[in-house]
Structure formats: structure tokens, C-alpha cells
Length: 307
Image (tube, helix red, strand yellow):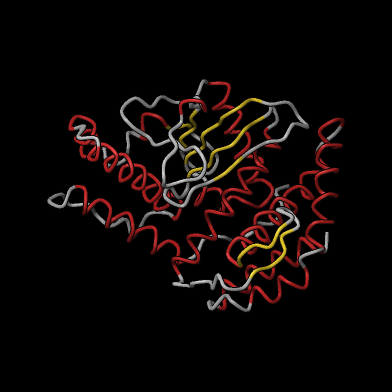
């Protein structure tokens, strides 16, 4: 039986997705008619939003390099050729890639490497697409379908590692809906990391959709970074890690052997770290001016503390 769903779709976020995608398409091809997808599902609108940012980033880079052929390719492919790259999953088509980490660009737009869909993009090998599809299924079965559908549209699988190794994952604000992460041969673990990074993407979109600006003048101690962080980063951590805790607690009874030990140790570690944020989290939430968003963040944090 599937776990209770945690609702993450919202009208303000869907409106933000639709409006932003429309604006990007209008800039790149102002004469074209890009119909509003008012009847589309949140997941479909989210995919268009995610892909539009890849097209914008790729087209801007091509324009700066005076690469006319590539710039024209983006104009002819406002969906970044996603249909040809997509893998079917329980939450809809997803773009699963396996770019070479050593060849990923770095620039002023991001402190971490990133990848942009383009004319040379190819889908990940079948075994990695199967791994990702299984991870989406596991995440959806444990209550995170809305979150993954709306905020993990493109996944770039990077280094293959062993269970117990340090797994790096990240997102960048310029490419919302895209997740970069290492992986092991366990869909359960990949689902955990997709949920973590999708949580970051969701909070960025929620803040934009509600026009909520968080003051950076106040800092809070982050037990994950072992340093004081501005409220923005602190609140991001106090959402993303609790989401993985809730997911891990739900999936733990289904695991056995080494995987069970790995997940149990992770949950124990996170319990201790999250407990250190209990007082400061309440103070940081006071900086969130959108009541619904503030309550959602409080509810998730409280649920994770109770585990």
C-alpha cells in the first residue's frame, strides 16, 4: 500500500511555472504563438518550465559565443528535444542523462558544475534510465509524487559509487527542475537524493511564486554545515533534510541487510542534526511572509522532529 501523499502542488507555483515558461519562449521566439497550457497537469507545466530554462541558458551561451547554428537549434527546439530523450516513469516522462562530470562547464552562474540540454545531448544508458525510473516509483509510493513530478524533471546522474560512500548532489537556481547527483545501484537511495534536491527546487519556486524575500541580515547555526548561515540557506536545509528523513522512515521497513543498516544509520544521524535546529527554526520561520508557505515548512520540520 502506498504511503500518504505529501501535497506539494500549488496554484501559485503552477502559475509561476506557466508564466515564466511563456516569458522565456516569448523572448527567444517573439513571433511564435506559445499557447498557455491552462488545462495541463502541474507536472506537464513544470516540465515546460524546466525545459524553457535549459533553452534560455543554452541560447544565451550560444549567442555570447556567436554560435549561430546552436542558437538556431534552440529556436527550433523550444522543448530542448526532450521528447526524444525522455524516459517514461510513474509520474510522467523524465529526462535522464549521464554526462561526464569532468567535462561539465563551470561559470559564474553556478559554484558547482552543471549541464544544459543541447543538440549533442543523448539519454543515459538503459540501465541508468531503469534505475531512475525505479527511484521515481519508490519516491511516489512513499508519498512524494507531487514533489518529484513538479521539481525533478531532468536528472543528471554523475559518478557511480558504492553504498556508504559520500554521495554528492546539487541543484542550481538558473536551471530549476534539474537535479545533479551521484548514484549507487539502489533505487531507494537515489529516490532519497532526488527528494532532497527536489525540495530545494520546490522552495525556490515557492518563494518566487509568493514574492517572499528572506532577509539575509540574520544568521542561524546549521549543524549540517557546522557554521552560521543566512536564513535562506538555513531554511533550505531545514526543509530538504527533513524530507529525506520522512522518506527514509517510510521506506526503512521495506529494506533489509546492508541497505537497511545504511538507511537506519542515516536516519539516526539526521535526527541528531535536526534536533539542534528546533529553536532557531521557529525564529527563522518568522521571516517567511507567506502564511501558507510558513505553515508548510513548519509542518514538515515538526513531522521530521517527531520521527
